[in-house]
Amino acid sequence: GIDFSATSDASGTGVSMGSELLDDYEEGTWTPKLGGTTSNPTQSYSNQQGRYTRTGNIVVCTGEVKLATSGISAGSGDAELEQLPFTAKSGLTEYYGACAIGGVSGWATDNEGAPDRGTIEGNSTVVRLRLYENSGGKQAGTGDVSAADYGDSTRILGFLAVYEVD
Image (cartoon, rainbow, N blue to C red):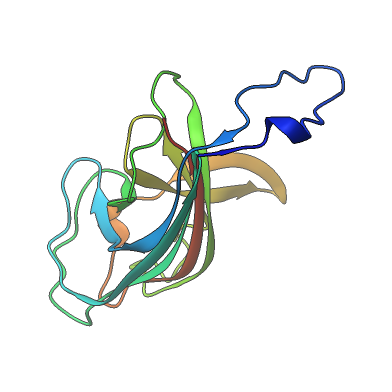
């Protein structure tokens, strides 16, 4: 790896210096797919593409996924974007990453139940798709998206996931 210890410049309250060794860098492609926490939908895809960059213990994934125009058998449970290229960091019970979604189309409920974000839990290779909930113009929290809401031509037009790995 590349050792950056000669340029150490960390300072400030609460800063603790860890390793200054860059021990991994790679770029590649991966194939995202839509799934459900209880059962996966049965479908074919018209588009599945993803790219990733891993720098040390941080992975950045981008991509797009689109179901074919017919023949979907909806899954059950919460909706997921599956097959991330690396397993998220294990050991803690909270989230290790987040996913921003650029746009969606083709969801069964006229896109009202479609995801606009996602979370990546520790020791997993999935993004749990989430929906910003609004109550009277105020944030009511983030809810899960149902895998039953996949429809013909469901599409996530672009996403960016960033997470930590071991």
